[in-house]
Length: 230
Image 1 (tube, rainbow, N blue to C red):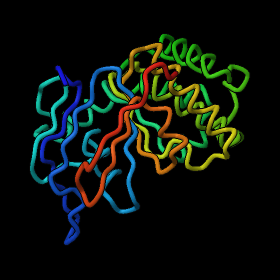
Image 2 (image 1 turned 90 degrees about the vertical axis):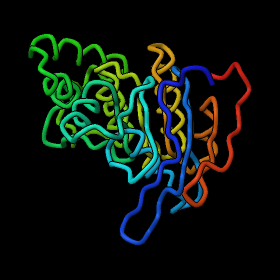
Image 3 (image 1 turned 60 degrees about the horizontal axis):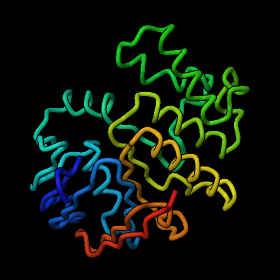
């Protein structure tokens, strides 16, 4: 692969006596959508969290556009996550007491954007996920599917280089899962965003360009999907 946007090389990560990653390696191309699959306890979420600079690694290398990120100090890793990465998790991780608009604007405000500009951009993204009429609602009033739409808007509002998703449809029914993935992928394609997601569901992994299988802490196999998908 020529010039991957993010790479892992022989990554090892241990939690106590448990070695979650045992030399995992992975390259992801710019704009590619990759699904990471594997049995429970295989290390797939640990790999995702390592790539996303959420956790540090014990050995190996992780590079973003050719530059090491695994060696960054905590404050630099935090800034990297705020400015270059978006995140969607199984339960959204939204702030339930805040409004939809406040939640989506929050990453921009944390990055120092002026309040008026942050809220204008947040409104545009809320409209993109077709929930403009819910902008002033408290997040706790939304359905599960609506919360995940807002989580996607919040993740995309900074226009990240890479969007990381950990079981993004794990708490949703089949119909809402399909709707969320169609929206998720369409928005990523529109903005050229790279997507790396963990899922245990083959029907969700089918939306990706490529499936990567993690077993026993290493990347064991990869399967390319046919071109012409969403």
